[in-house]
Image (cartoon, rainbow, N blue to C red):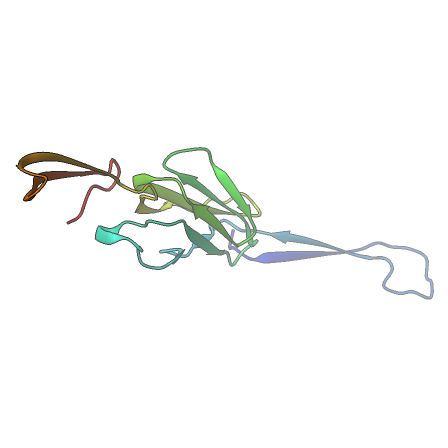
Length: 167
């Protein structure tokens, strides 16, 4: 069947009365076999990573938008790094990502009111590192004395388990 709305009018034979259309019934049948579509890419705020080398260093939001010309968008579903499926009612909504991770995959898709599911699913990959690096400083006295001054040797070590150290 074509994707359209069909109307069926039923006229019931009743006695003649002063309300000529009270015996008319209308039944609407809609056919929707097209899945909804979500916007790609989604809106990310801030739009560019706020750290070095493509990493976010603070929480960011992802806003999803979807459309469906048939029955309308019921919900947008999503997963973050293959975790539990989240549901946003309606045709738009926002999630916030704050947990550290490299190459976090956010997958999302829309579902319309008759159960059509968007395929293929959309996917983006983002990295976030909100944990500050660890820095240690050690020193050793390698010579000198109290009246002429001391000679020191310093060693600095910086580590960052997530995004690494940029110098």
